[in-house]
Length: 233
Image 1 (spheres, helix red, strand yellow):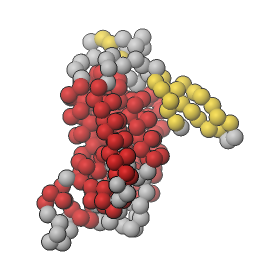
Image 2 (cartoon, rainbow, N blue to C red):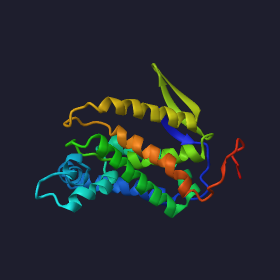
Image 3 (spheres, rainbow, N blue to C red):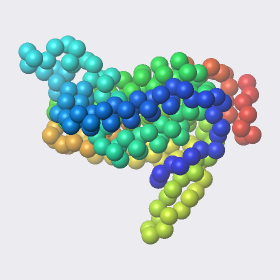
């Protein structure tokens, strides 16, 4: 399923969301422009769980800690970047409008850090760098599901050889997405430490964090979505 747009209008211009998208794209373009994206950016600024407790004298405390932050602004390729930015563009503006600019930025970063921690705990001996904004974006999905469960998501759904465009309730779309992440994550628990792939547990951790924290960052903590699309106490 590929989301194309939602039917809920953002209550304000999403300055922070746009800045996050531009920042991710610029970092990706800069990394490739110097020709050492994998060796310099991915290896140094991606989160390698095994390095956190590394006994190497060359690994100082800063090198162990800051990848939890820097890894969420790196991507492994164009498809990885485009997919993440599409989700952030569709779902992030409404969440920012609901939380406010500063609260949204803090929420995004906190969810990204928790997502990285989840991936670290479930793959503590992995030597594969973890990169991507999808953990933080998963937190945004959790908040969107909390605030706008009845919003409709225009979704591209391939059915055999046909392509269908279907409006799916946000709660259903996000639940199916989470179920796929969870089942896929279970399958990675026994994978060897040299195996790469999608960081499903970062998605799971970020999403759970988003669900749990959304109300704390809400500017309207006692309102919820009514069937008419309005809010009431």
